[in-house]
Length: 284
Figure 1 (cartoon, rainbow, N blue to C red):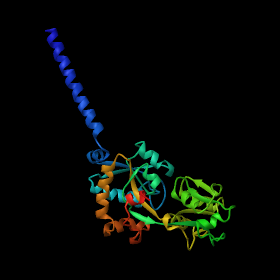
Figure 2 (cartoon, helix red, strand yellow):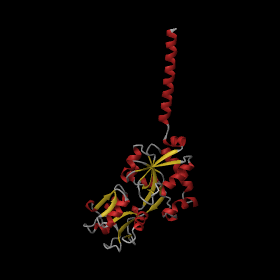
Figure 3 (cartoon, one colour):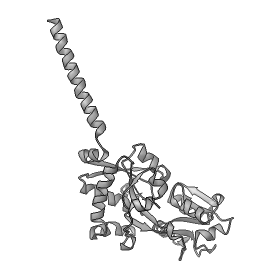
Figure 4 (spheres, rainbow, N blue to C red):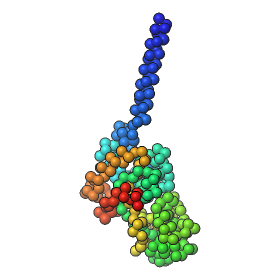
């Protein structure tokens, strides 16, 4: 009898172990897309940079990328979008470490970043400009103008493409004041720690509107056309099924009246639309 009971118990334990192994195997095989569709929740990572992604005074996370994310993930059956704030330079490490599932921060597609993340196709195109003191006392209209005056300081956001864009034009590292966010860029120009700040045209115009009495964007900015930025959502390299599902929805939605109404409050319009693909930009 004891032998029989032991045999039954061993059989039950084996069955339980097999069931647990099957469950573990299923869980490990579940992709991010399957998980977020099963749970109805997705986590987006962002850095405070208006108008792309930022926290409002009431605590709501908004901006072009979070609002696009809400629309696209709802189409995928995912209704809850949680936002994780981080510094710009920590977005890709945070994504790869699993702190969030998607970077929704208006991040530019670049060949270097393509080695680290899987980009969706771009949702906008945009160019850079400079934020300067009122009247543009240093007469700056390009990165090259900064490079020609080695005593000048240029405030750039650490990890942003403007670091490379300015270097391409001859700006020396000693001239770069790398700061964590756009608020610090505005403060650097206000306090004259920097003679100018560089960023996307929409971002710099937004900063200028916060203190129109002291600062402004340059009236004409000359830049290399290759510096045109193409912003997109970014995913972990292994999450290509999620990227592809998002791309399918983006291709159907971008340029529609609903899309333009969604991004219009943040300064985007039809001129920001592009037919470029992530694959084309990554291959440059």
